[in-house]
Amino acid sequence: MSDVAVADRGDAVDHGAPHAKPTKRRMAGMLGVFLAAMVAGLNHRVGVIALADVRAALGVGLDEGSWLTTAYAAGELIAMPFAPWFAITFSVRRFHLWMVGASVALAAVLPFVQDLSLALGLRFVQGICSGTLIPILMMLALKVMPPHVRLYGLALYAMTATFVPNFSIWMAGQWTDALADWRWVYWQIVPLLLVAGFLVGWGLPREPIQTERIRQANWPGVTIGATALGLIAVALDQGVRMDWFNSPWVTTSLLGGLVLLFVYLMTEWYHPSPFLKLQILGRRNLCLGLVLLVLLLLVLPAGALLPSQYLGQVQQYRALQTAPLGLILALPQLVLGPAVALGSSSFRVDAPR
Image (cartoon, rainbow, N blue to C red):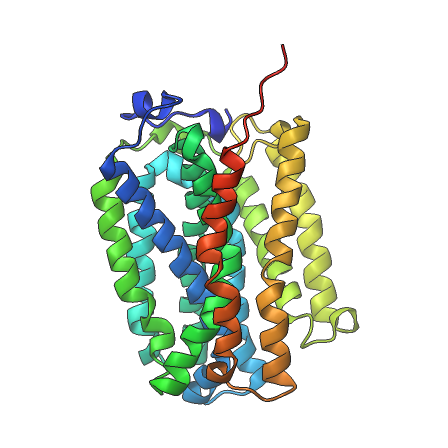
């Protein structure tokens, strides 16, 4: 059965009403999910920008320290495709609070870890936990919000790829230069996620665990898929440093990941209860929308990455010096996102007779 077609237990009437007005508690829960998704993006990007300060604190070089961002990116990529299935199975409220709690606990202890191997392991687990928070935002935007406000939910989701990367430059500059305390690179998410957890716990309904989905799931397939995504993430994140296909490690990781990904997709296609129901991609509009979404999520962050990387690597700018450029690009997104949703919602397309 497709995850999209599964109705949440205990709240089916509310979810099924196509034009039901969201309650204040439900909107507070959505706000908490949005805040957690934004914080997850900040956790990744600030860690990348402030990596030099983190490496200095750990006393490791560029090559060893680069694996801190790779470990987080691998965990994030592994978690994203499977997060909606786990959220539906364990209930959105319960699963989201678990992931928020784990992310907070890891962020609290990471600055005290001086062993690189342990730091890599904890950062990988934190990437898995934080990586689940962004897909849940899109899932709820499509599932909970009524059609006449759904575009605003999608606009909030888009801000994770436009606002967060640019705003992260300013945040990293505050911790490493203005405050001069690199530990806040990790601690920054603690108060924000606590607020997000409170809103989610208060606003989203309690629902039972759907144990039958756990028994029917494609667990061998998801093991293969997680391994494939981890290898691909390692190859992509370490490719520049290792000179791409001139490195046997990058070549092996990428080819192995692609082969395992193909095997995983085949197991999902034929499994009666897949994590991802690939057959729905046969719908032209859905397939086209997914392709465009992936392309936008790849292209939009480049507006922040390229200028900041040029100023940092070529001009030797610190994050605080680059921060004004990031704010110029980030702050208008707070207005442009809702404005685009408002403009789009004003157009009504009548269904063909």
